[in-house]
Length: 308
Image 1 (cartoon, rainbow, N blue to C red):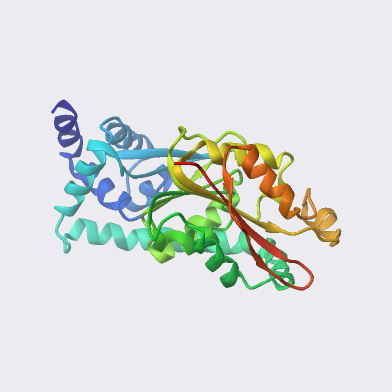
Image 2: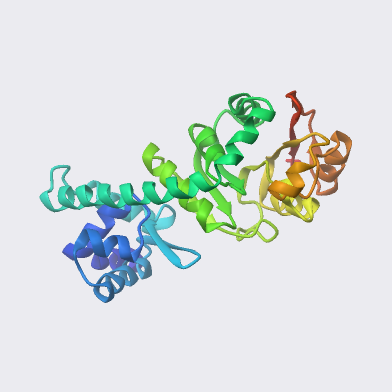
C-alpha cells in the first residue's frame, strides 16, 4: 500500500506528469527533457529522482548518458502505465511536448545516420553470404515457442535482430558494449515504435541479469569477435530459463582472412561439431542447425536448449 501511495504522491505534480507521458513514448535523457520541457537541468533532475525513487521510471546508464523510460515491471510499472493512460489524448500540454519530442528524435536519427555512414562497409559484407531475411527467418524458427515472454539479444549492434524478433516476444532486451551502436539501434527502434524493446550497455562476458531470466537468448554474428566464445555461451546459458533456447548465428569455417585484418574478426568461422560441443559444454542440448549457403561465406544457425 505504501508503494502505491508513494507513486501517487510522486506523480501528483504537473512537470512530473508530463515527464511520465514523455517517457511512455521514448527513452529520454535529462538533456532531452530539458529541451522539451524548457526547464533547467537541476529542476528536471530533481523531478526524475523523485519518479525513479517512486519506481515509476527506470534509469539506465549508457556511457556518459543516462536514459529514463516508463517502468515496466512491478507495482510501480503498473501504476505508471495506469497514470499515463488516464492522460487525455488531446491534452494540450502533452501534445506540445510530443511535438518537441519529434524534434529530439529527428536529431537522434541524424546522429545515428552520421555514425552509420562511417560503418557502411559492414553492410557490404552482407553480399558475401545468404540474405539477412533468410537468416532471420531461420533464427525465429528456433525460438522455443510461437511467442516468448522474455528475449535477450547479446551484442545487438544496430538492432537488426531486435526488429526481427520483436513481433515474437512480449519483452525484448538488447545489450551491447558500444554506446555508439546503441544510439543507432535506439533511433531505428523509435522509428518503428517498439516500446517493448529495451537497450542496455553491458559486457557479454558478465551479463547483468539473474540466472533463469530469459526464455530465449540470441547471439547473432558476435562470436567471431569474441576472445573466448565459450564464456559468452556460458553466460547466455546461465540466464536461460528451463526449457529456454540459446540461438547462435555465425559463419562456418572460411578462408576470407581480410575479415580479421580489416574487420576485427578473431575467428574465421566455427566447425559445426565444435559449436555443438560448446553448447553441450555449458549444459544445453544441441539441436540440428540450419545451414544457409552463400558465396563465399556459409552461415549456420545453431541452437541449444536448456533441459526443463
